Image 1 (cartoon, rainbow, N blue to C red):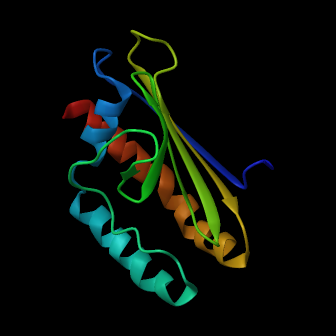
Image 2 (spheres, rainbow, N blue to C red; image 1 turned 60 degrees about the vertical axis):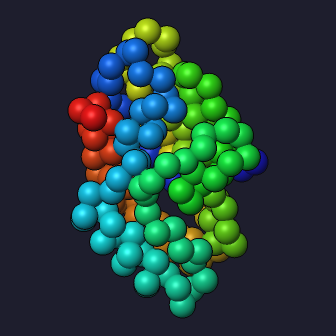
Amino acid sequence: MSPPDYVSQQSAEIAPDLSVPEIYRRATNTSPGWLTAAFWLRDTLGRPFGLQPIRGFGGEMLLTPGAHAHFFTVEHVDDARLRVSASDHHLTVEVDLARPTPGEALVTLTTRVWNRNWVGRLYMLPVGLAHPFICNALLRKAARA
């Protein structure tokens, strides 16, 4: 696969006794109102360009390979790492949530995006700016849940 067109990485200190899947659940079990509004705006504005609606986070999910967790497909899961992905005809997204050192508090969220066409590139202009803010907010939510 070619190098990604966009890479973003955020880290946070989160209780070392929590597994990475539990951290993901805590981060995404509900969405703050501002994020729900942002997802609604994204889905509404993206509809004419053929973007698949993502509707946001919330609710229960099964975190096993091949299962769907919100708008992602689970690619890999164990106590130390969760990799999810989503793909459509405009872009491919891969998100890794990992605890690089077992027993340590540091958790890292890495997002990689491959644009497939001009719609994907255009989409990533505002999303690329907002993405670190969103990820940091989700990590903070998981840390205090």
